[in-house]
Length: 145
Ligand code: FES
Image (cartoon, rainbow, N blue to C red; front, top):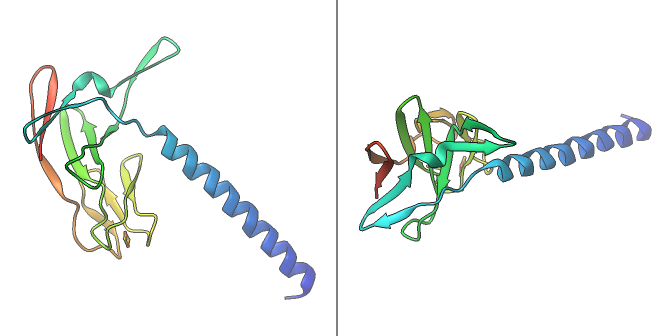
C-alpha cells in the first residue's frame, strides 16, 4: 500500500466511524423512558406509555425503557401484540449496558446480540438476559422486581 492509498483508506475509515457515531447517537435519543410508579416491589407502567403521538398521528412503540433506583440497569419492555416482555439491559457477558435497536438488543462492548425475548443470538455472551414476571390489567403493566 503506497502513501496515497493509505491516506485514502484512513479518510474513508474516519468518515465511516463518524457516520456510525451519529447513527448510534440518533438511535439512543429515540429510546423512550416511560413514566412509571413503584408499589413495593412492582413497577406500574401505564399501557398508554406505548402510544406515541406526533404531528396529530398516533403509533405504537415497540418498546419502552424504565429506570428504577432498585436496579443498576434500565429495564426494556417489549410489546408484541398483547404480550409484554421485560428484560434487564445488563449484558450477560461482562455487564455492559445493552442498546435496544428494533427487535434486538446490542452490546456496545463486544458485540453480543439478544432477541426481544432476551435470547442470545450472537456471542460472546452465552446466557440469556434476566427477565421479569409481568402481569397486566386493562390499564397497566406490573413488573415484579
Ligand atoms: S459485555 Fe456485552 S458482549 Fe461483552
